[in-house]
Length: 173
Image (cartoon, rainbow, N blue to C red; front, top):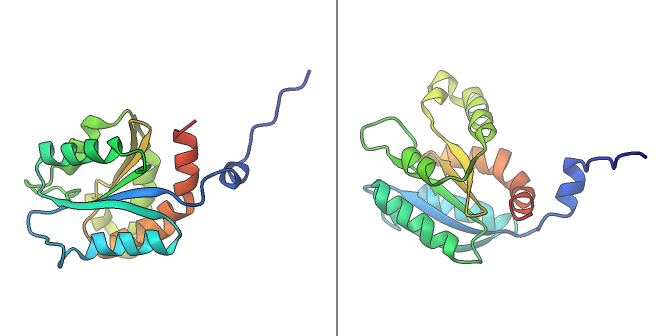
């Protein structure tokens, strides 16, 4: 008796949702809705790719606040992914990595590895300072991106937008 052949990524993508509900969270001690260029760019790129922005917020880089907003976002059934920008560096105020890491049920280290590889091609060895990450929390995709608009564009265009539906399909199975 032959075993069934595993589905290919292309077959998975064919069955994936075309439009994903996303919550965009900017982590910053200084940004306002008027100066949040990275959050605005993420919302624009998601909408342009046919995804839905179901909410957004700006919060200071305080672990308890970051975790609270992520918990609130995933409590909304419309939010299938939470995309954060900011707080992923190594300064004394950058605590987003640890705040998100503590929540994750599963980690997808390949995202950070690929992001840093692509970033290296653009900015050189400074890419190693990024602690961009992806994981699963309460069956939702959670992604932390740097605060730079260029880094957000790179991550969305090269990694997230091409795979977002596939990611949501897999995590919801």
